[in-house]
Picture 1: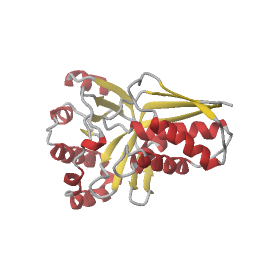
Picture 2: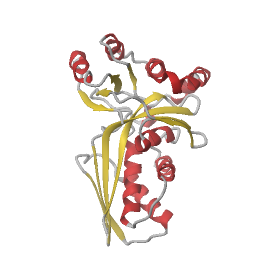
Picture 3: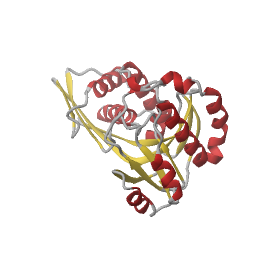
Length: 271
């Protein structure tokens, strides 16, 4: 019996690499997975022919082990709106969606945090994450504003926030995890530890400060963030380890800001 799973994307409020505490906001970009038991393994990543299907396969196999099911093979189809290696949590979204599809196929119910934690282990195994990305995975699957401790996979905070437009400016290049200057990030651990308590009530400012710090660490100024703020954005900054710029704007204001920035962009919203 076929099963369906869905998860979404997220943007960074505070990067977890420096001190282990991270924060994200869920956005409307979506990943859908379809899983069907079969006699051979067939994996299709729709419109992503150059991506390695290993992560999706590992998630499916680990999910089967988790629920005690066996099958000779399976057909797995993954569709996603989320551009990979841009800081928009594409790997976390795929993990959540694939695991959810396997559970749905066998009629098994698990809590969302259980799904997220298994996905984090799969991402670690496939080396597509530096911290485990528990903050990313929670933002994708739970929506709203989340704060997590990625060292212990603990959800510290999850709260609804006012709905707003999200503009994601997409440069042509991508940044893979093996190119991230991890030690530079960790040198700022004290600075990020001090920002963490402010997230619950001042997440917009933390998002701006985080973006500025990430830009410094990767050695690339981000004029789009500053310009977006001058145009009236609520917050703006490099998401994840980049290179995408995430911009939060009032409802109905995102498109105008994006067009004035002149970047290649995706327009979505928080969720």
